[in-house]
Structures are given as structure tokens and as C-alpha cells.
Length: 251
Ligand SMILES: [Zn+2]
Image 1 (spheres, rainbow, N blue to C red):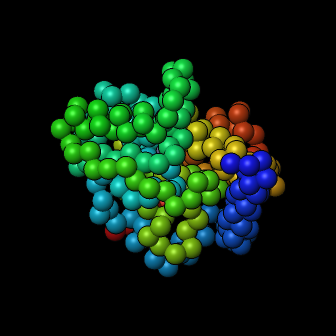
Image 2 (cartoon, rainbow, N blue to C red):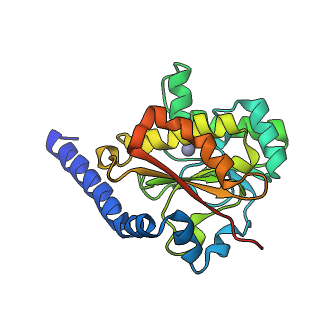
Image 3 (cartoon, rainbow, N blue to C red):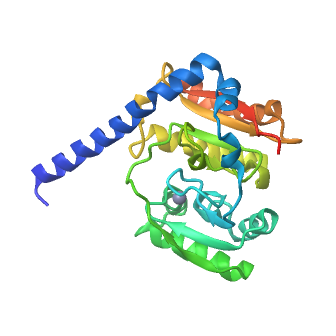
């Protein structure tokens, strides 16, 4: 590939990221105006986002919606804890996916070189063997970059923002089935780092236009509790993150 071609690709890549960013500004304007609780309560078909119909483990990546979420299908938890997660969440199958950031982090943490997606596939297959669940495939992603400006810190474990209109795309953090420390300090922190990094919005995220955490409260996982778990992330991200949330609709 020639130098010029590479530049053009990089240019169109940033263009796409900026288009996604601009496309979401109106929704965030409204969330700022109304506050998260009122905004989400105003979404007409919000309940549709809480209909669990897929029981396969998916990454927390916003590009792999549906299913039961855990970063890299559990690669950052390790095999034993990931198997516990599968049991607790009622998983029926394990996926991996293209361009997995969690698998790349795992590779970096362990000093492994080579194709990190292959590590992700291998982990998902090992987890399938360990749990006796089927490995159900390597999911494609539609975009190379991350377009989420939010992460859902989900106390229900079944939330899918793609099932209702007017819900901003976000990373899916399955707080219902994951320990608080791991969910906040590993998954939530990773989501914000990805969004603020080269594969996401980067410097478009500022204190004026921050990255959002939306806690979704249910039962004992109250809004106050979930938001308090995220509060320590301010040490790393300061006012470039904003912590808000709403109550899951009553069935
Ligand atoms: Zn992933």
C-alpha cells in the first residue's frame, strides 16, 4: 500500500468517527437538558431493551449487541471466574468477535505478540470446553472504530440498547453477573479508555462533551450503589466522564 493511500484511509476513518460523533450530539443535548433519569423514562419503547432473547456470551463491545456481556467473553477474568460468570448468568453458548479490544489488552498485559483476535478465539473455545457450552462463532463487527460515547453499567444483565429507538450506543457492562470491583475498575475503566483512545472518539471527548456512564438500577443494585461504584473512576478521568443512571422499567 502506498503512503498516499494510507493517508486517505486514515482520513476517511477519522471522518467516519466524526460523523458518528456529530450524529449523537442531539441525543446528548437532550440527556443534558432533561437529566438521564427523565430522558430514559421518556423513551417510548424502553421496555423492549430489556427482553432477553439471546443467551450467548458476547463481549462488552458496543459493536456486539445482544446476549450476555463480559469483556472478551471473560478473557480478562481468567478461565475459572469466566466459567462462574457463565453459570451465574445462565449462558448457553460462547462467542468471540473481530477486533476485540479486550483480547488486545490481554495480549499486552501478558506480553504476547501476534494476532490478538486469535487469542480471543482460543479463550472462547477454552471456555466452551471448560463449561461444556458450545462455541457459537466469531462475530463480525460493522465498523472498525468504536462509536460509543457511553457505557451502560447494567444491574439487570439483559439490557440491549439496540432494541429501542433513541438509546445512545454504549458498551455493555453486566454488573448483574459480575463482581463490583472487576465491573468498575476493569470493564468500565476499559470502556472509557477505548472511547478516549485511537480506536474511539479520542480528543473529541472533553470536560464539555464527556463520556457518559449510565447505571441501570434494579433491586439491590440501586442507582446510588451503582453510581458510587463508578465514582472512583474520576481519579483517572476527572470531568471527562459523567456518571448518571436510571431505574430499569418495572415489568
Ligand atoms: Zn471485545
